[in-house]
Picture 1: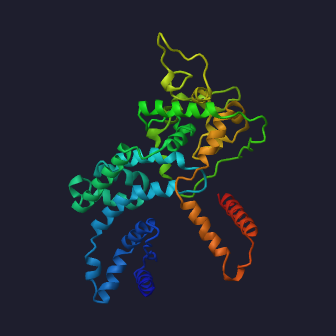
Picture 2: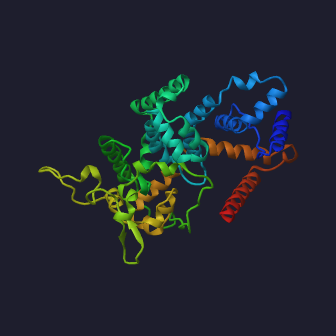
Picture 3: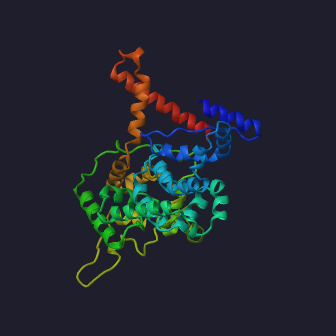
Length: 372
């Protein structure tokens, strides 16, 4: 605390903008990035303080170049983790596309440069202009970059993802072409999905249909989701050229597939031909209004018309998208429960605790919507 106050005082004295150091926590690996970023932001102020205390060697062992390249190395992982752990909307569909994005990003030092310039140009523009070549990559940074890339490739080789990851990706209108998946894998995944839908019993009433949302919740921060466009439906990438108009003059988008059938059934042979499209085929061929395609897949699947047109697939989609990709949201809820159920409230009933947590969640959502 004394060092932080001294740094703030030194920054104010030199006419700079007072910032603060952030502490790394072993239980939250994202805090490591924040800690390193705060050291880099306060590098000059820290140097002055250590020099006054005759401890300049403590900061000199950390070069500014090494610090910046470490941040460059950790940035894609930090962004992917932050987006996937977001609890404002379902994010299971992001896991597989982000995995492919990370493989591509860590394949070379220059692709790390490009990612940093695309995602956070304010912090990395000057650095990338000063050190524009691969020759400037430190040997230690190169070692860890190659290790991370190999680990990501091994994850893909050993079939780390299960069907739920692929189902979630397919059941997001933006990613229904599953461009991040090989053709053979897509055929296999959709075949298993058809089997699941065949074994599902249709509902006899509309009680399961949920109310449509008025609008998509927006995030406060810039999302890595914006950089997975290479794995989205081709129509979404070239929307300006391939926009269609429906009867109400609303923009709609269609899948880039060549026919109304799923990709593995777009061909016919002398011995086999699809006679009737199922819900998967109909979903692939749907003309989806652009207003229903966003970061939240439930913006589309919560529509009553969609649930009536695709009753089995919409039920399954809501089940899949309810699966959290990480335990972060659960851990947040346990933390909030710990703050609520303190030593002064030990007699609080479990049902009352549940009610309090629901009310607090509703208030946070309302506050966030009002801020936006």
